[in-house]
Image 1 (cartoon, rainbow, N blue to C red):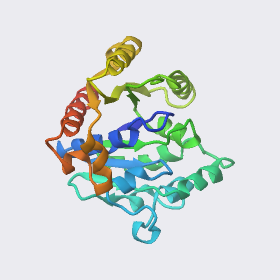
Image 2: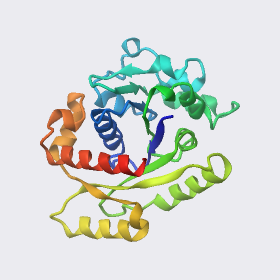
Image 3: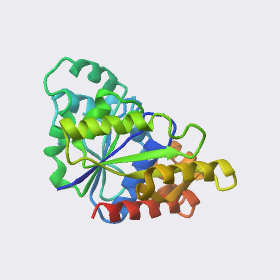
Image 4: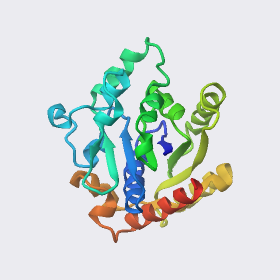
Length: 257
């Protein structure tokens, strides 16, 4: 049975999609059969892996149809350029689907039910959720074994985190008692500034052993890679960002044994 990890933070611009893509890539590199589900209507994970999220004809089925219940997840899955690494793509239409299912039955468990039909084919399923506490995000939490929280080491880094954790507790109480916080990942870390060090110390103080030892640095290569349609490890495997995500993936594997 696959280990399902929901990558989430209600703040945008914290490296959520970058983390989901690169974690998936390095899990696949480590011979783990990995499915990345793009569950964010922005579709950045889809375009970041070289797919045209505006060309619905070439994409075929997407997470829009899956969440609406008209297409099984298996029919939306596409192989990426990389061995052991598949993608279930998203387009902006997913936002409309979220509105459409609001008044329908089983609106909170659509994603969990979809994953159940395909997880036997994978070791890991990574969900890239929207940067909001939306119906899609709640679906992601209910479908997952673990919650992974990227937090940028900048001012207001922990803003909104308490609310997200409260939502997690609510999901655990009412729908998914097995959900747990896998850990908190410090992103956009700049060792040259005292602010990054101070924020990391605050994260460690708050989350203690749940804080990942690896810090993802501010790195030009990490920022450039999505425009080339590949993870940073494929774009420049010798960059600091690639090394950090590789080390971080090892920590994830260790925590999910």
